[in-house]
Image (cartoon, rainbow, N blue to C red; front, side, top):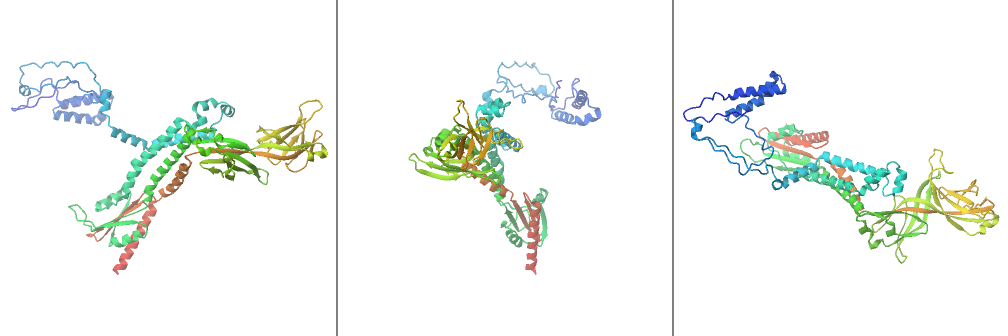
Length: 599
């Protein structure tokens, strides 16, 4: 419905309402009844619910504006047409209620054209500062950062469960039902996937935004010497969670000495007399302790950023490789670094990697029960001329480092067997022969444990002459470098011997003497440019985390000359009870010193 607004009153008097023009108060009541009927609200409750409608209608009537003169053009962001003309203001005669000589002309419709804001106009109205502030506010949100951290942790868990950088055949055997999904989602190389690196980058941006928008402003505020010079300031301090009280007869000097003895940094100044409403005090004091607790959260964020940066550098530019090196064998370090990130070619191509790695000897240390306790590898790095560059006996968690290359002890194997084969007493004079050992199976065989869990087994086959020209021989199995198990050509168990014991054993009319078992060392070569940054980040993270638990305490004092005492207040960010006990003891010490001087 359209409601006409009464014209402005003339100089001679107000015009009475027209016959067909309803009163605004009556219109308000009608609007309330219509709204309640549409919403099915009882009349008693509808009066309260629709009171805002009545008030808006009365305001509209008082200001002589139509009650329904609202348009949705602003909400729809429609821009007015350039050719739209402004309606002419009513003539003085029309304002006084007199008929006009000319009839109002109907406005022509606007020409067709774009009614909504175009992309160019929207781009011109874009405010980069507002967008920057909104982006920082979103990135610094705790919920946002917590979600990012949860996603990174979930992907890292996948990388822990699923072995990384293996062949497709390995995943078909290890995960027969999920190998295709692992390959499809890239979980076999999850740490180098773009979505994982993108999540790490967004998490780093959230940490930086939180430090910039929250931690730095808090640190700037904490570093300022802020004095409280009015009694109302202490009232607000007590209401905001701090502590404040008035101590008659107390002075600033003994309180300052008591606070300084407890490690506070104290500043004191004279309060100048101000305008009306200011305090009549003659001195103010501000003391603070534990500012490092405010600085530590920024250090925590910087440490985490260093860890993320170092991990990303290792993923993108790091190179690594695994190899099984037998005793006396050598391999090039550059050839051993077989895997790397997108930028790994830059790291692998350095001249300092043109060295040879040789395994001099491999040994295993056993427990009293015969289990493997530790294994050692004597390694030597040589240049092209064969000159030794570095030499060390490595073990698990004790690697060899040389100019950025780290060589870890990760695994071991049985590589070969030395033996003598002859007839009866002539075996001692026989020539030493060597055969390789191969890994057979993880389960079954003579080394099956009582609980059903199999152990690794290596074996070899020693051919012997046979009158029927069939391929038969002696089978030798080994679990470690301590003992071997011997079977004849029919597969029957013959006996057990220790290498180097000098005790021969008769197998199929032949005498066998086990001389030595040779081991192979499983080594991992790694060149990671981000390792120093990761180590430094974790070290700083441990220190700053401990420091961040230190309380930041503040104490204010206002000397009131009119009352003859001190207003003392304080607050802390943690350990509130400890802080209150410390503040009470400082005040008690100051009062005792003041009484001693007065007496």
